[in-house]
Image (cartoon, rainbow, N blue to C red; front, side, top):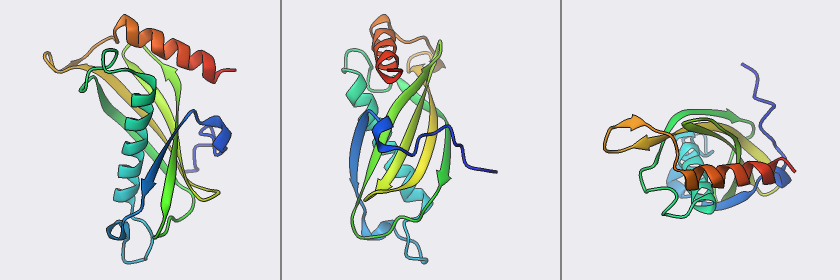
Length: 147
């Protein structure tokens, strides 16, 4: 399957950046960072983006769950060093949001990813609509991204 070209490989497209240190244990026998570590890098980027967009009162600690994750591996990532995970909101539905991410090592875009997260009520264990405050945050973030 070809890579998803709708996910930007341009650093300037991303609104939030999360640096991640590459650990020695992130390598596989081929001496590049393995795919399990890359999913953890993307998780750091998601947490960073959500923390950047929402205050704690707008998004409870367990207010979003990951429903879908796609990853396109473009170039290998190698130890030692750090990567930067760029994230941005691209869509907001009635109960979910779609975000894009890119992992850069130095100036090279190595990974692009799309995730869908669903607003979740931990008491009912079901999806839910975001609060009015969270909806306002999403609308502001989308209006900034479309400029």
